[in-house]
Length: 131
Image (cartoon, rainbow, N blue to C red; front, side, top):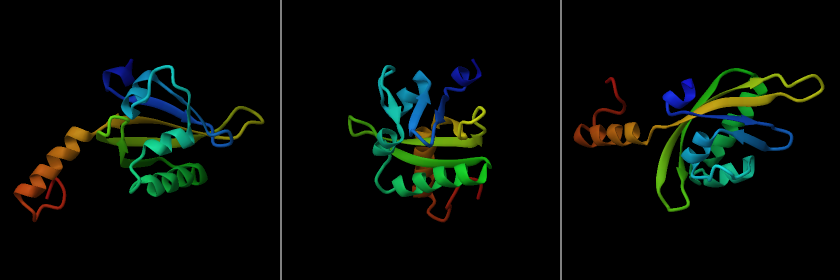
């Protein structure tokens, strides 16, 4: 309920198989149908080409460090629309004998990113909000 009220999608990445379990909301954020099966390759193919390596490195870093990791990146939906996604995840221990998983939450931050861009265009001296 908390994820739904926050308009957030939940996901789990199994690094060995590359399989991703995702809530319907997460699939919707990424432009997939509720019945679509996801894996890391399919999801990375939605990531904007300029952001793809950064997302891959972030996933690897999160799996190696075990610390919270967050990233904002663009996706290109099947209709060509570019959306901004904010994702936060952390490595969680797998069940006995199974490798760790990466679990997290994603939200669409496109409206915020557009507002930031509009502010920068109005005042180019502002490199980010809060300055």
